[in-house]
Length: 319
Image (cartoon, rainbow, N blue to C red):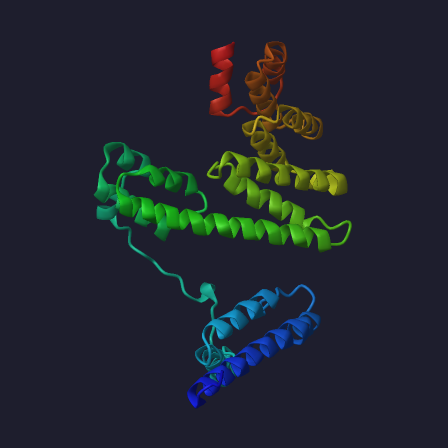
């Protein structure tokens, strides 16, 4: 069977295209990726292409003859000629302390703002959207639990806002936890900076309980393990607030044995702080240890610890 001239050229183009794709993949996977990995500075995040990227591009070249290789060549050419050069920011100053803005309160807007919970309860679309936009424009770290409530809103636009914000924040949280864990592994033996940072960062989000039960449990375990490392290195860096955060998160996932261990450590290290008593009271109440609960409550009443209104109300109820 003889090929016509057009068929011969077509087959030749396919073979050349295949050869280009194979050579591109081999050069990238065997030479470029290892070279960039070796030249990466220590601690610098690897943002270059990996072997999978080169494989996907090679497959695109094979499936799209001529067009694929030309496309990737043009993109690389644009990168080399236009987008490779950095921006000169020598004359740009970002100091925030040079400008002090005085913004007048928007009283009309404040009067019309209601909590997300109330807006969902009355199914007021306008109020829900207004509340969501105010949260998104402001500080969201402490309001994620309210945003999570909006996922069940009947208004699809409000639910979309909530899902988008939560997805971004939770992915950011997962990535930051992973980075801090890597820094903990790389830090010197006596250094505790990253353990402290990770415990505070995780507690701020985990106490809002916006993850699924399985993922919440996993992150609380990570938080408790990090606290254990900090306790081993330097227990003095575990403040009463950090102890309380670990105890409460463990109590929420019903790990009562671990929670009791940390409650005892808190009571031993900070016997004159209120959290040393409240953590044990919450634990004993949850596991229905009546004797230990009232013994701790009686000890608290006889101590010189300053009691807040919530604890005072609890004493009145159970006295």
